[in-house]
Length: 500
Image (cartoon, rainbow, N blue to C red; front, side):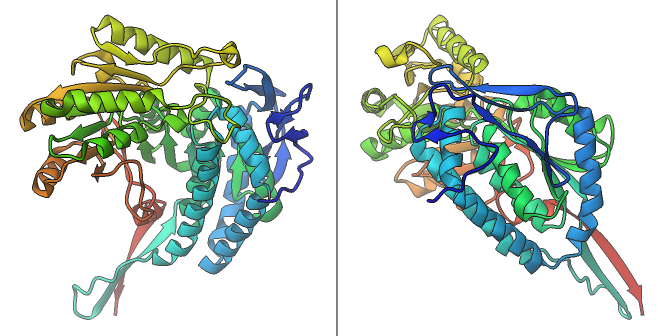
């Protein structure tokens, strides 16, 4: 992948910022222009691997969001008037230009998130593919004809909302940004994108590239903290909102949005996802998959991580031993090293949260079977490092079994009969994903039908088919994304009745 140098970017080496570098200085994209915040405030970012300064982006306030909305309102009618082919051509050009900057984006993403380089490379590739998927899928955006009355014509058409807002999570910055613009833009909307304040730097490059190829005002990128997000949520002209993040923040967004207008809000929130192993499952494959499902390449910082391993009691000890062996073999190290399999936790507040839950696991009587501390060695003296961690003999009511940790902590639990297993699996407030491992397809289907989760794997984990709807039950969210359902959700349906 080649790289075109940016005038907004510092010099970068393959290992990140050069020693002594002043750091990355990014700007926001508002109305097609790269700008700073009206207040002059900045949001700084630090490398979680060694706590070194990385750079800064503007700290947008309410006035900046208002400017972005005004620009979006002015530009959106012209964008909606374009054909699907014309919109798609703009976005394909955006993909091409972004790919030219892919090496630069990858380096800044790894440094800013702490995620290891291999999965982050896949994030960029998969994000570009998903955006291109929506370009083609947009031709399926159709209304209906309803031939219910003789002598009359009844049909519906789909129209864009106008201005949409998307607030992204910290764990997959460029992936969520790419996934987040395809459906709303191809549906004819303008969009205002806000990256997480915990990993905001790549968004500046994203905005810079957009300024070069997209019509002014169609895409704005505003960086900042909670005030920035609240300004987007509360702006009365933004009628369509999407958020990826924690359940408490999702509920706060619902409340705030409802205070100013009736809005269409979709939420992809947290997960406390079960990985269920029946006694007849292939034990070694299931153990490897259970470790894979924890997403240690992102330090367990993924909503879909299967962080509760429920094993039938007759094979419990065997599976636990295999899982502990796999976890202890995970190579924790420099995120830029291709051999590293796990990096540091993303931010100091989150690091403290993970440590809190590790202590809670011990206090609640679970047995620490692996990890639970800072890795040994000179390279881990600084930074937000935690070993991949496994707790055994976890009680279903323990805090580490009930509350989302969003870190590299796997809770292993025992079950004897199916009713007990279903009760444990469904006994949390969240319901995003689940995995079921058994050679009995009837048992697998009966279990899948009873699980309160939005996306279920049978004898697999972690993979996402592009057209499959993704979203959660209970407090794991509302709405479905990543397929036709998402595209349709960025339109309003208008019924037209012609009396002939």
